[in-house]
Length: 154
Ligand code: 4BW
Image 1 (cartoon, rainbow, N blue to C red):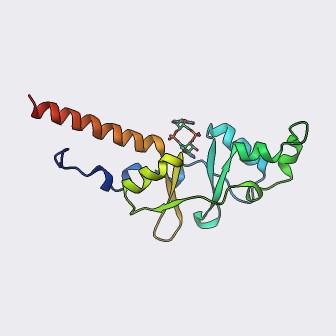
Image 2: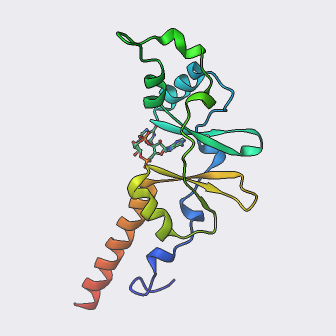
Image 3: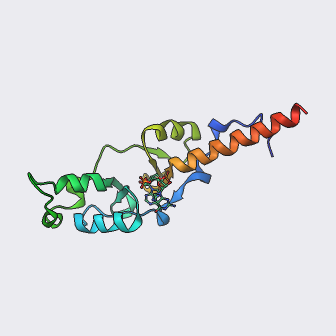
């Protein structure tokens, strides 16, 4: 096991942090907005990936975008939930990283994004890395470092 003081946190590989595709709540581009809202509410997440055939990532759908799409002039119009597909409303300006990318890159992205999508070598969606996984790794590293320094100073 490498000495904690020699460990390069920023060069960590991503595999240990990826939540794999089969554990990621997601919807398809052709699903109705009503279905997407049900999945979001049931899963408890604010935003989830939109995956097409062969696990290709098409976008990100969020509760905020769905609510915005049914906002009428004076009231919410939930009857519109079945007038739109997920593909009409999803955000398409998402960021992805490759599985062989580094912790440093994902850590920087996680400042702006609550989760980062990971692609495999065939550009299929492999899973996500969440901000909480990033913070947990940094937290563990800093605690190990403090422990090692207090041993050195004793
Ligand atoms: O249902 C939940 N279970 C757990 N264990 N934690 C949850 C749940 N819902 C929210 N949380 C917590 C997490 O700490 O609230 C944070 C913000 O959730 P979000 O963004 O706004 O729904 C969660 O932080 P996180 O673990 O760093 O996750 C960041 C974002 O990644 C979430 C959500 O958009 C996405 N996400 C996380 N796990 C997911 C997922 N999307 C799909 N499937 C998953 N398994």
